[in-house]
Amino acid sequence: MSGNAILIAVDGPQANEWADAFRARAGGRPVRMWPHDIGDPAEIGIACVWRAPKGLLAGLPNLRLAVSLGAGVDHLFSDSSLPDVPIIRATHPDLSMRVTEYVVLHALRYHRRQPLYDAQQRERVWKEHPQPAASEVAVGVMGLGVIGSEAARVLARIGFKAAGWSASPKSIDGIDVFHGPHGLDRFLARTEILICLLPLTDDTGGILNRPLFAKLKRDGAAGGAFLINAGRGGLQIDADILAALDDGTLAGATLDVFPQEPLPPASPMWSHPKVTVTPHNAGDVLPDFLAADVMRQIGRLERGEPLLHVVDRKRGY
Ligand code: NDP
Ligand code: OXD
Image (cartoon, rainbow, N blue to C red):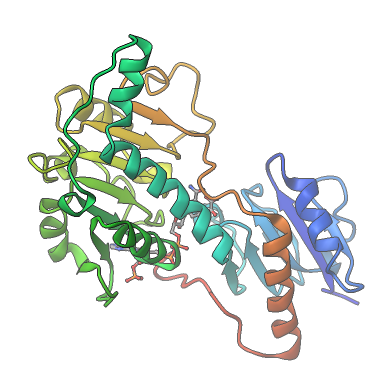
């Protein structure tokens, strides 16, 4: 049947795992794989993609649905030939929890002075430092969506003074909420550990810059201002982060994402003593979990029912 096949187009080492996860659940629908097994493009109705090459989807004349296998959809919107079909994106409790684990790990690492103890261990120094309570430390999450709201809740549960910033007003138990451009400065002024879980859009690109870092709270219990970015690399200006670390505006930065990935070997981020680099793995999700969710959505599409988590093209997320 025309438009019945599912295409998996994943640029990365997990491509086969994704294809297997879909094949196991496709219920008789053909599953094709970019780049070597696309078959007849006219047979493809659903494209499940992660950083697929630009123009690929425009070459599928019977495409009915584009599925982002990541929570972020900037990889789709960077394709100027993206066809005008509904787009849904990855959301799953497993994905939210993995990213939450990541930001909690690194917030606690700063809160508990672990970089200092790591340095002492290298010098065989046995010395305790004063340790404030989590309730004295202000953590702020930029982006209170599916993932950011979960992360903020867990940070609050651990005891941090937790706040969040979003585009529209929110109400989340135990979290101080701020929204919109007018709420940003007040959010930053109370935040010592800044966690970024924003999508990359026309409005958010480059938002993690030096003027923004300068507005963070540096005289609180955390002992300085810290940045944890697990959103997207395009949100951050690397040169500004390095300059802010060198002049003390920032005391530390943990970065899972970069403007250029993989991070080039020559990047000064690799060896900066106040930077922790991870290879965009905050939200590694199990393809089996997500494929099951996507197949349920494909069922909805086929039955003419409304799709969930549809991306708003105007907002860009
Ligand atoms: P959502 O779309 O659910 O949430 C996005 C949040 O950002 C919303 O709260 C939204 O506000 C807010 N936001 C968007 N634009 C603005 C703006 N201009 N000003 C203020 N707030 C804004 O996304 P998810 O929570 O599912 O994921 C967030 C991002 O995390 C993804 O886009 C992706 O880039 C990144 N990610 C990274 C991973 C990794 O491995 N490093 C893994 C998974 C995700 P509002 O609620 O008002 O709309
Ligand atoms: C995502 C990601 O967007 O892995 O899910 O970055």
